[in-house]
Image (cartoon, rainbow, N blue to C red; front, side, top):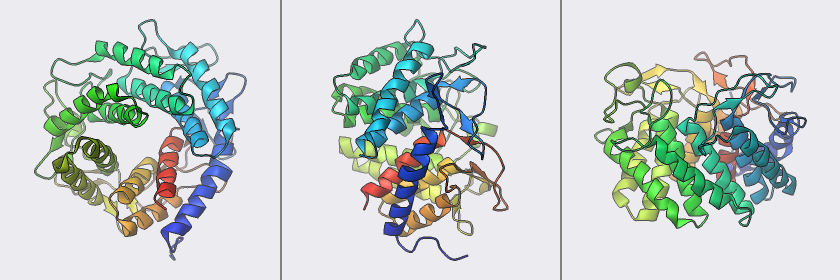
Length: 366
């Protein structure tokens, strides 16, 4: 099949036009519940929303998208919507202890009041984008209040404990590092302690230095679980951690960590199916493919990492693979099957955060 993009410039132009002309209008139009004042979880191929409880992460990711789009010059209206969405979110989701619930039910049914660490990280990320949009809006103060509330989730062996069946995991910490670095980028140096705590835990516990590869799940002493989930290696997360640790290391002058970050990127490349041009879902402990399917989000992290590490050919390949997931009208397919086809399902709103980050990174690299 002929390549869609001859150059990265062509990919930059087409994906940028898709984000601005199709995706953002769709997800702030059909994807916005005007009566409720928040974002829908997902849309079907006809643009109809999915009913049911709405997770915190959907509201905060979409708030981040809108604030970031406004800051990128893609439309002032998105900034207005971001502020409105966050105000409604805070009213509905904030608990008495300062943490935020996992989900609420728009129709008055039962949500889930659990304060997942993952959800708190995205509240902090959304607040960082809102602060950059409006530094006098009180968002920095709110973020510090949430940071203080997070002390209740601190783990004695280091890091933070997640709620649920996998309390000791890398993924929630990854997004906490992302949020803390975003606050550092916004000029708030007091967030360096959070960034350093997560980076140190990753370097000491999450990453096996010999490969190097990053593991996902651990016991209470931050040792990788001996079986099952503890052996999981996700190429998308290798890429995501590589970009975040490289950002952290550049700030701290840690050349050794920048070398390690490139090693994580190389491990992620072991999970790229060269025939289909996609990052697969998972590898086993030997870095052989375990799950050859491919989620959309992993393609965006593949693209971002290739751009960061200056691999133009890889970035072009990643852009090609990513584009296959996208619908012209602004939606997407989330899961690619091992045979190359797509699993028919709703388009999840959470993917727009990944797509916006990757497409804006592609624009910035031009």
